[in-house]
Image 1: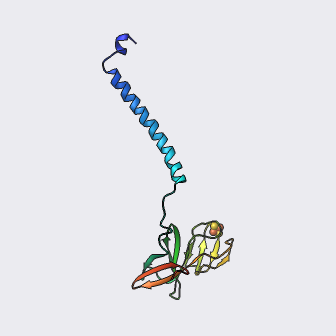
Image 2 (image 1 turned 90 degrees about the vertical axis):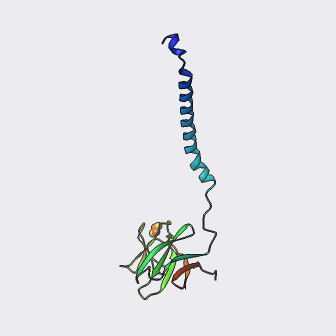
Image 3 (image 1 turned 90 degrees about the horizontal axis):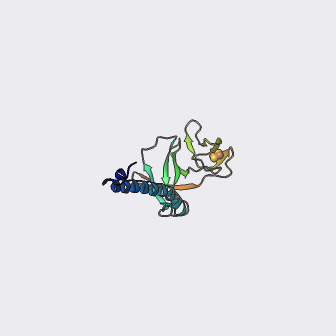
Length: 154
Ligand code: FES
């Protein structure tokens, strides 16, 4: 490389561009590493503590012998309309290893697919590895809306 080409008038601009480009790449790499670490150390606020009552659905959303998952704070819950027309609401977090359970119309039971755990529609553990019942919630209607509340919070 000749001395003349090293001192070309456009070279400082190119060097500055390369330095900015590489610096931005290093900064982006650091940010992509630090962001998840900071989110782990300082987790975001959840809606868990804000309400003991949630709107789970509307009358007519469910046919008898079906269920649906809804959010209760940050966790899933299960609203069931039993074959005899009664609403039941329970936690959808399996008491074995925290998988999400589902209502099985064919079995008329709540089933955990992870290890074949089985519960009654009101959350009682009846077979498989779950060691205890699912948390049960109160259900009440306000007009056409179905609300679910933690038990003992009238
Ligand atoms: S996690 Fe539900 S049965 Fe194991």
